[in-house]
Image (cartoon, rainbow, N blue to C red; front, side):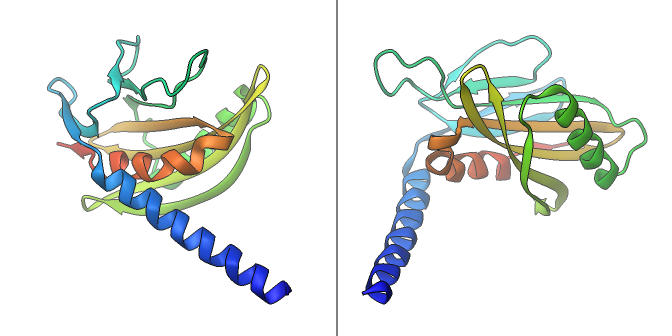
Length: 175
């Protein structure tokens, strides 16, 4: 009986993961370009762009139900790299998040390639007011600048949005 339940759970997880990836691939996409920063990114066409101070871009997922107070979102900021290597920048980000975000807990970090460029990707959770959030944080360096893409969701909806977040991150182009 335990083997049957384990097999059914495994099958559910595989099918659910495949369905989430398929859903991300069926979304219509737009391209946003910041000519000043020479950055472009693709994002879901149904997402709303907001002007937020000190960000290159900020996009929010559409509302999914009445009374919704938080919408999944992405944003990118840039700043001087302060002569840090990517590994040092990731360590610095961990330290700053740990000091400034309540309940910060790093779940996973790894180095990846996006468009031939080195990125660090960190998945972490934190608390804000009465909610727990889960973020995917992508970091890269280019020509003395550091670029940070933060993809934010409630902890309970993160797995649903992660394939979209990953596709957004993998579309980033920096000249």
